[in-house]
Amino acid sequence: MSEEKASRQRRIRSARAVIRHGRVAPVKGSRTVLGFIAAGLSVVLVATLSIAGIAFWDITRSANAGVALANDQKIPDIGAIEGGVNFLLVGSDSREGTDANVFDADPGSTLNDVNILLHISADHTNATVVSIPRDLVVRYPECPDADGDGYGGGGWTGPINGSLNEGGLPCVVLTVEELTGLSIPFAAMIQFNGVIEMANAVGGVEVCVAEPIEDEYTQTFLDAGMHTLSGLQALQFLRTRHGVGDGSDLGRISNQQVFLSSLVRKLKSAQTLTNPVALFGLAKAAISNMTLSNSLNSLDTMVSIAMALKDIPLENIVFVQYPGSTGGAGVYAGKVQPNQAEADALFAAILADQPIGLSGTTGNGSVADPEAEAKAAAAAEAAAKAAAKAAKASPTPSASSSSSATAAPATTPAPEVAVLPETVNGQTAGQYTCSAGRTLNEQ
Image (cartoon, rainbow, N blue to C red; front, side, top):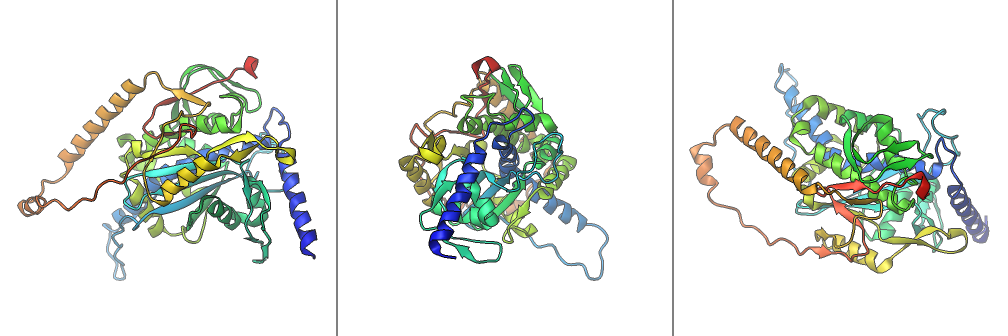
């Protein structure tokens, strides 16, 4: 096959994906929103990777205290992974395992409608989570196909969510590496069906809704106020696009961060960390709903990454939306175009391992929680009580250990915070936000 013909076929495939992706959805569910169901599980994994890994580790270490056998092997002491971590979480829009009466028919192709990049700093003091819009127009690199052969990239562009269908998870990783300039050694793919299991495993997630959410496409109807969402209701909340902000996919990202920041706070709370049943349920739900890269398919690796995440303060876990705006022309009209200057600033900071600071808003899908100060104070009080209880339960350090502790280790200065431009949206896990609802009359 000539290169010209191969190039033409690639463009046809891309155009089909673009056109299909723009179809109007029936009420029972559109494929243009289904992929975002996976966003919940994807960013949930950022938080639960720590808890799931440590849960398995603790369970295994506890088993070692049982009946000793002649051929017992000592469980190694596992510490935090050395250096920084780049980890790509991909959400597939596959219909596998879903109820045909709830979701529309399988389109016969699989798109990566969710692409979330986790960066853990080399000193393990901060983490940045970048949500890449599914319709972001990017350059496709040369990717391996199912037979291991490559196809020519050569500057061909298209929405990023076609890369999974082109060459599987490896192609998504290569595409994001070219987009960001980062090396990504760890990756996982999650199907959206798992978000129900994860929401149930955690016992529901409390979200704040500032104005009513009304969305006939996803059957999401929530009054203003506080709601604890689990199962299908949580899934509907994560799917909604028409019912929040300006009805765009970019607005939906910030709305999802209302759910995800609340989930991270719950997962890192004492109520979850000290509950072995909850830990095991989260671990099982996470592992059961992931396809892992070979580099990640190891308990030691998962626990090592977990150890790097577990002590990062909520205010140092930053969710960022990849800088972009809706625009374009021709077949890419209405797709998300990169805001290159802002994107360059974001990834220069990540490459330099600087903590990220936000100066803009959370995005049009969310607003600040008016009760944020009171909620933060209550959370701090609960954490202090839990810490005091844990300290009381811990054995008193010996005199020798106390004397050795007097020699404090040398510390290195904290790296300078890279404050992003005001046009970059996001929030920290420590921020309390509410969904900016949108009624049917506003649509």
